[in-house]
Length: 151
Image (cartoon, rainbow, N blue to C red; front, side):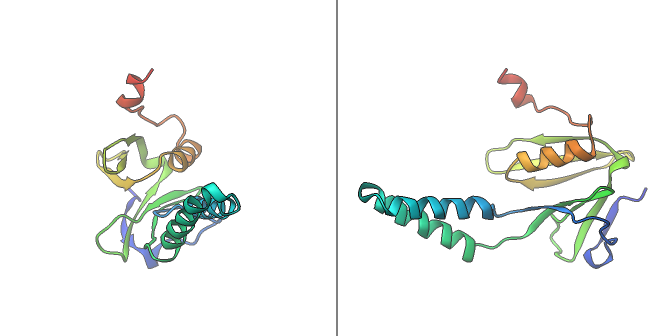
């Protein structure tokens, strides 16, 4: 089996630019700051605008960010290890199924492999993960029980 935990410096060269999922939603923070700037021009909302600007600038400049997952046409890379120098590389043809699980504090992506093992990573947003997983591993998603209850 080719999927394994490796040192990040030993990752194969990217054939195409990878799709990267970060911890911090920078685009959302920028939009929040722009919304705050827009609120500054309306006197009743100026206080809310100032708060939005402060929160977005603080989030972008002070809060730490790191890469959680990288998607490429051949494999995906999970960076959720205690040792920052290691990562898990998983090839698409070795995935049996995957599931996005909702939890109160943070969500989890669980990937089951052909050798019976599973890998999981803590995440914060389903949308970018689901799009890429369905693109590269179509038909392998296990639907969440929470989603079935809402129907």
